[in-house]
Each structure stands twice: as C-alpha cells, then as structure tokens.
Image (tube, rainbow, N blue to C red; front, side):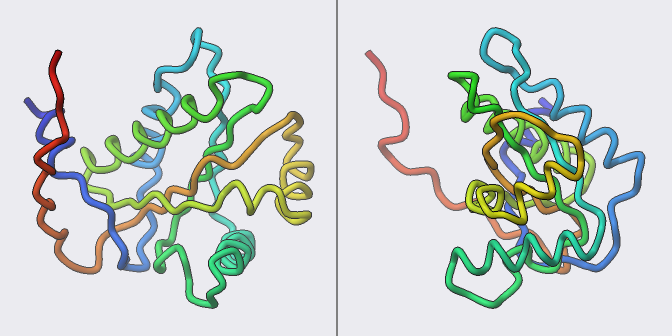
Length: 171
C-alpha cells in the first residue's frame, strides 16, 4: 500500500527551498533509477548528476532558450539529474522514461520534491551539451530524455487533479 500511496500523492513541484538533497537520500533515489525496467534489460539509459552551479546555470540557460524565455526552467531547484538514452537501442526513449519515473517516485517516497523538465534533448544536441558529455568521458549516441529537478518544496503540494472519465477502457 505504501507504493500505491506514493504513486497517488507524488506531485510536480515548481518552487524550491535552496537546501540540497542529503547525500544518503540522493544515493537512494539514484539507485532506484538504476532499477527501472528496460528493453531486454539492456539498461540503455544513463543518469548525469549535476551539482556544479555553473553547469546547472548553463543547462538552465540552454533550456530556457529553447522555450524562448529567460526565466529559470528549473524553478530554483538546487539539484539536477539528467537522464540520457542510448539512441542505438530501439527502446532508449522508453527506457529513459522509466528511469525518470523511478527517480520521481523514489524521491517522493523519501520526502524529496521533484519535477520532470523537458527539453533535455535540445540541451544535449547543443555544442555545450556535446562538449560536457565529452569532458565527462561519456561516449555514445546519447539523447537527453529529461531533466529531473530535486529539492524541498517551498510550499505545500497541490491537490491531485481529478482523473479523466475516459482514462481506462476494458475489452
């Protein structure tokens, strides 16, 4: 029942306190991401932990530019995880999406707020993104799947939106 409660109560957070997630919790969240299901158990996704403020700022700037905005697309969250998928695997997008889901749900179970921020694809198609991967020794045909911002909410979580009437069909 604990898992179902977490799944039902997890919400995206868009306002954060400046406090970083404790290392023990961060490690548990990351480990949960590594246990996501993947096509043929190939584990094609990788997780980039961004804790360097300059790198975070540059990725935020790239992300905002894709939106045509100058606001922080990471909502002030102090910690950032980027999931990338190996495009040489036919299930890379699904694999990376499942990693993102595991990360979000693990964070919620530990009292850590999160939000999936899109446009990681464009960030890592940029010269900066490619150079960052090269600098880190990450080789391969990787595409950004998603940015996961982590931290502690600056306010209460919103209530769940009602579930739509035509969500489930049976045959």
